[in-house]
Image 1 (cartoon, helix red, strand yellow):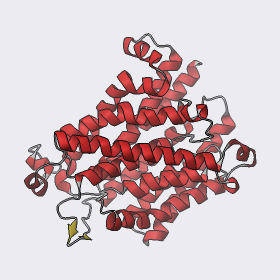
Image 2: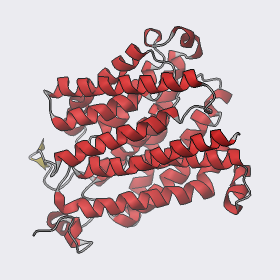
Image 3: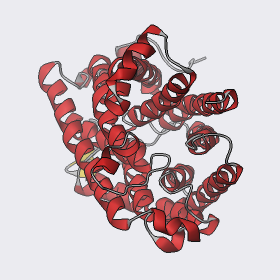
Length: 385
């Protein structure tokens, strides 16, 4: 790998790392001020958990255990080091999605242990299938350029399973009917969405094999931009200009375009983003009312459903460039989506139910009512002066 390609991957990894700031801002703005500092601790800890678990176990599951000792001892070459840096950021992105579903009620220790297991074992299994040759060796033609399936469908479903095991927040359902629990800061949530969108250019463009193919890089950047626009419009239309759905629509469009971002025409990318933005309120309502899952930050519609839309759309010919149609198979896309979903659902249930039965997942009722910042951290996010 040339030095310029190493720099390219480090650039991409840096932007993806900065997406963590966007995740934090987007999520804390969508729930109550009394739990903001606590949530920041969760986000910091899952980052550390993934970095540790992916170094010692995860990368080996994904790409071969012969790589582990060079990584641990620092005797790796430029190719291995650069690839690890980029892919550990993908792993961190997949795992940090989970907090959006479990906000305001999960204990720190089991959350940290869950992040270790998901980042070190469960996610790498999916990564191996998608990017490590697993699906290809099975004869499944599955295309997921930047992770609509591997990162977002997976992370969204694992987060929903964790939220299901946890149960809803105390005030969420009254006589079985869901109650609105407004977020405390819409502008900070919208700012978070913009930070995520900025980092997404590294997420998608950085999924290229290198910097040499300028046409591919430009095409990916353009498709990313058009999907972003489609997601905003779709979110605004379906929610009647609700600011959170509109901001989340931008993220939903970006999630959906990842899978086929190298294949979509600009108009195709816009359509994919539009679909992802539009479905949000309907998917959220189904999760909230029918499944009775308290999905605090809408990871179901934004990540799980948008990821599924992106995976399927990457196999629909009229959305693709003419020379891309022969590279994908709708059958392969559907099979891949089903496999990823099953791993996420079954694995997520086993991990979080196991943690719940052993050390307990949920904070006390008293702590939840008082607020986790005060009850557990003895601090507050904002000064009262």
